[in-house]
Length: 342
Image 1: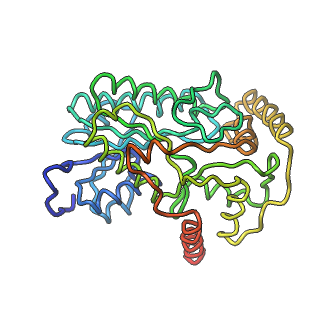
Image 2 (image 1 turned 180 degrees about the vertical axis):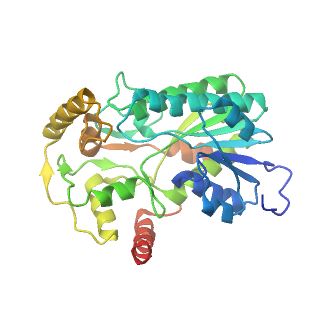
């Protein structure tokens, strides 16, 4: 691993980021390197960009307890960002990565006496298919889920909360729709479907997003706050731009940044929901692994409001978004233009 300047005695000697080569993980790694922390990444594959930064990389399966325990040896702080995302697939695959993987991380923290764990979750764990407007962290989990990702992330949250009650200092963050240069999910999905996109609902539903730099900042702030105030352990925080925007305006802004035309076609939410029901039935019946173009969860996500009160993160963590949506879109456009020139 590349040598860095000596770090302060109060700083962690070594930090592990699970999923360190991912979109959020790599942004957190960059922040940690800027702080001259000793950073280790744990992921399935090596990433050349991390190697160029002098990051120690360990390849392994987070579902393998011994492999993650090995990676955690000598670590003082953990950012657990690795997860299986998406809206389609087998429950066992989601459970294995999101729940068993988190249990393994926690077991490793306990075995090696690691004091702090920052866990990346998602606001989707509380999404119940209705408009959620300005709700705070007290909103309960829904009785049922229409996708395995939020369901298993909710179970994992409870695993982390239980660990907090047993002495591991933890904070759970719920970033909403992370986007920006380097995005490997949200922005590429929109661009890839540009010619097939259909607005679901009336187009007025407000949603939260979070620019990648702001999401990374929030994770660093959470680790700092937890070190200074252990009483925050076990807390959950929504983090976002704090600036709800109409979902379909945001999608059109992203399309414009990519030099593409805006979405013009529309469909009522109820029609999209019924199409989702039928497609899910067909895909399950014939064991089709490819993601359907529409599902119940996606129909609700596209048509309903989902934005959240982030005042707790501001009060306890000192979080405030540094990069505005407007500035973020400018940076995204430059990145997309450069990619087209490559």
